[in-house]
Image (cartoon, rainbow, N blue to C red):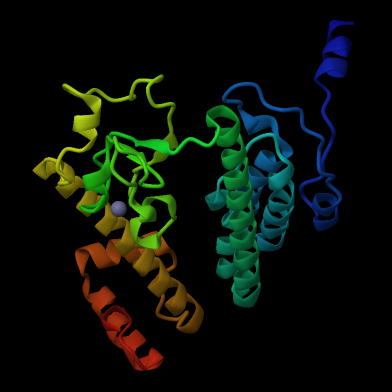
Length: 291
Ligand SMILES: [Zn+2]
């Protein structure tokens, strides 16, 4: 009896994840909102992601790709907000399966979807800010060292967006735009009720004076070096990935099996790595790293 009850209460919809048709037949579930941080590990889209890894390991790229297509279809309807990198697994699998044009099509679709998400988020934030703060002109920036030299001058202050305030400096306009050259910078701008709420950071003396202190980069040497190092590493990895994708597509006979393998070769500057560079330049007709 106990087992029988247990079966009823724990029974879940049965899925067939071992055939293309079975995977395609999965319906988009109707999710209830997650409470708090939430854990989506029982969600079918998560199970599909894991299953894709398994199919790939077994050499069934067709099934692996079908799983990732289906999970990408479910992601936007989920009760969990899945990051772009999880959507991008489909693109990576398609490349590995040498379906390059299809990979490019899917990548464009994902980029467009995330552009849309960002716009929706922005509209939502604007509405909430208006509701909470009315048409406030005063904003605050956060206390953060992970920023570039320029942004470093503007952290930990209050500003006036319009520049009409007699108390605070005018907010540099670029801080309200998402500029690619500041994509690694962690500076944030948020509205505040000036005169009502205290800044979230500590300061000494008079707040207005403090916000008008000289506009200089106040980071320590270590903080500057850490930022530069991490940005350099991220950009280098992105460039390496671009090169690896090109040789994987155009010169498959000389490309290492995996991107991580390629990066290891590059890090040790092995003779094999040198050979790949020379051969790739010959075949592509240009030197990728010295364009
Ligand atoms: Zn910056």
